[in-house]
Length: 314
Image (cartoon, rainbow, N blue to C red):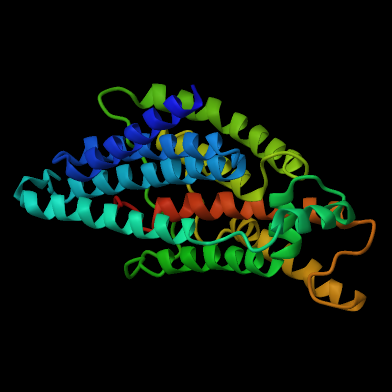
């Protein structure tokens, strides 16, 4: 039964990926791309990689899918019908072959790596000292804390790069509204946004709290929060603040700043990013909540785009 499920899932992933590459209609291709992200999440779930599955579904299918839909909307506003019929068939087929070849190369490289030692066992032996049970959180916030800290600053830097694209005279105004509802659907979209945003906040808080012992964590919670903010903005339930809003900037830098301050305080105990014995879990949870808020705000604003001048549409 498991083998049959894996085969069917693999065939669905390959077929969906091919459809996303070969379909001429951009909207249909985006829909298949979103479906592909969810199928990949199921594949990770089948391999017991729950944290990766959550990230894939939230980012690969959710956030990236919304980004592609917004891109299509803005290109439509420029008069592009987004039908790729002018692209020759050999170009689309070549893209499919190139992606398949790249995937085969990556798969071959991964399968050729012999398990040199029991890395999981080594991490498991160090987990009791952190006071948490989720090994993914332990790796990201303790054993690879430098990587996680830099990732937080990379996300913030990406938002600054997006804001730098603002036209002259647009700074520091708010990004353009993400109104996608048409033909009288504004009220439905707004009601859905008002309903979903509180649920996203509750789920984000839970994912951070549970992430110390169960699947979850700051990045998963941040993507859920970003999704709630984006859907609420699409429905018109909320509006974007100005780029120089004080509370917005606090939300953006809170996670990296808390992480950096706690890391610097560890120098007094011997090294950078060293947690005081007995307080490891408390400090990790504080960092996770700060990162979740910053990641959610950063991802949502990246999708919203650069500030625009009043009276102009994005």
